[in-house]
Image (tube, rainbow, N blue to C red; front, side, top):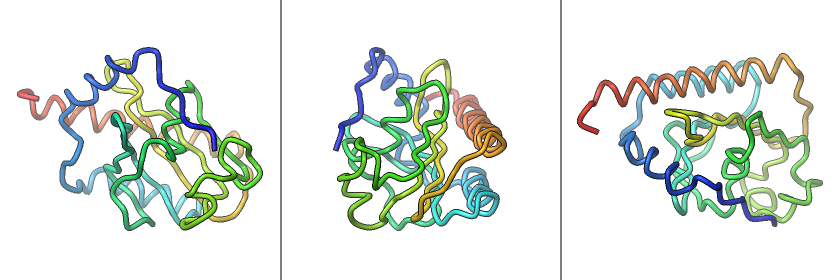
Length: 167
């Protein structure tokens, strides 16, 4: 398993993430509607809005999983924030970066992953991702839709910051 890279601006990114004061906040239907929409639109069992903290991936919204966070070391999303575009993995079982990842080998047995970075204040905070338990392709139209959903989630995070200016 390949560990996710540490970004060159990691300390600044983490400071910006913590300044949003969104980590460990209660569920918010505005975000949950987006993940439900993604699950329906892409016909996938799992969709999440995840934030990449120092040592963990925390889910602001997650449909299809019963956990609220995972270790950053095994997170696909921690890899995705290293890219400007969508990271997609057609079959994680065959991808050398992920094939022995515990999330591939054990439940939820990820095969397909597509994650679009969420940017707020110029920093990649996490991803909007969709996951399937079977391999699949990902079209240009799919990329546009995922990018649109990610932009909406990023805008919600930025709006949440202005709704709570003391943060």
